[in-house]
Image 1: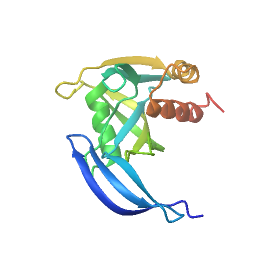
Image 2 (image 1 turned 135 degrees about the vertical axis):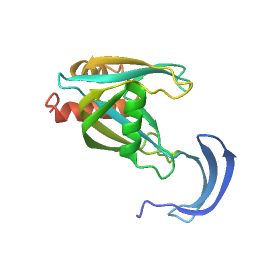
Image 3 (image 1 turned 90 degrees about the vertical axis):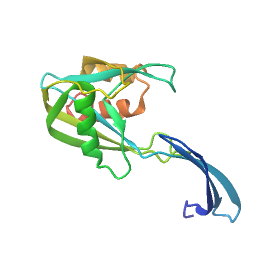
Length: 180
């Protein structure tokens, strides 16, 4: 078993500012055909800023898809072809007004791989220095400084539903010796 599907044809059925939607016809391993609807998205980046005292700088902002203000790590959408770390650095400066001396790649996640091409690389940022926020026009968020230990408890208690934030907190907690 190869666990693959072969694309037989593709049709773009929606073109938007942030996402596109296409319908693929695929050949399954047993020879049958199936339809797949795929969200095309350039991807994003998440970055967990950790200070020397074990605090994480989080952002809380309204997310229309969730219909609520969500607490999450600083993050942003990649432009097609953009380097993920450079995007993460930009978002860190824009959202919390910080730069870091060290960036550690924590891995990548596929938020919804059944129907979306989005990939989100996640980084840890350490050795923080602060300047001024540079929020995008129309971007409204609140910065919150929360101990990593508290965030770990929040993830394990089901209080942080954002997947990139959960992954970043868990991987950072392991790196920092809080979780084995």
